[in-house]
Length: 197
Image (cartoon, rainbow, N blue to C red):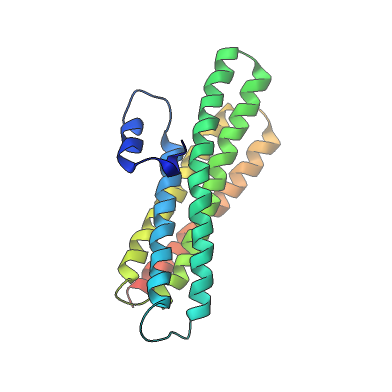
């Protein structure tokens, strides 16, 4: 069963347990998916409002993009749990090649999570600017969740890089993580400012 098919209470029970997974990376991905869903909802409410909006087409397209991000983040939650489990198995094997490969994967997944969350935060700038005013507070919650998931994922990336010997890989991951974090902060500020209009 995927996390996306699992009741939320059951998922949280598994997080709050002695199991290794699901852990921070999966939780961040689920949080990002929740943020995407809220922003998607605001697009849907705006598009289906009684008074047609001049931004109908743009918000309808954004709803589709946010739905894609939500689905990808749910899949990344599963991928993160698999990556973390693979790291544990690699260390048990004592095989350095396996450890390095698993460590790289455990960095790539949260980095992709951060970058998908960045897409959500950037889309939220338009949602908070053009969404129906009664629903914009929901988009604000959504963008705050997605931004928190982005930051959490970047934190995981940086922590996992300590296990990796490949300096060029580490440098590339650090650069992408830094870029996602900076862009996310700027987009979040704009989205929150739009919501206060």
